Length: 118
Image (tube, rainbow, N blue to C red; front, side, top):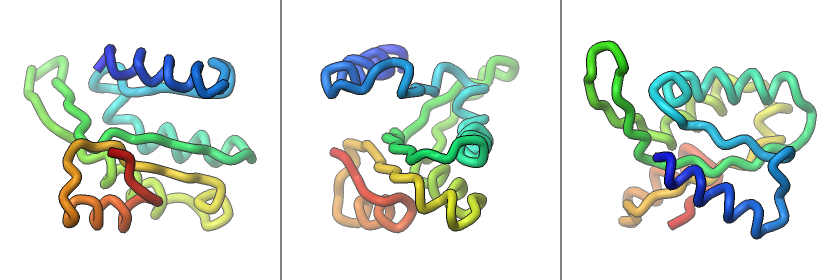
């Protein structure tokens, strides 16, 4: 949501991560649906390390059909990791943020990403 993206920006500001060193995506259907392609292209075009915090439940509404859907952020991260060459995947650290924190949920997040944030 817009609120969550603003809150995340404030958290990064407080942590000393300037706006020119971060990218926050997820504003609308096209950004959510294009997330995997965006990250893969970013990793291929940059040689630094990348830290990602990915929301588990990415709610989207298709602008044309008005259909509501929920995309799994951890599934997106798993897909990204599989698409990246090993040297690029080693430069990425991805955590899943979710309030779904049962032991089975956390186990899934840890197999798809590098860790979990409650």
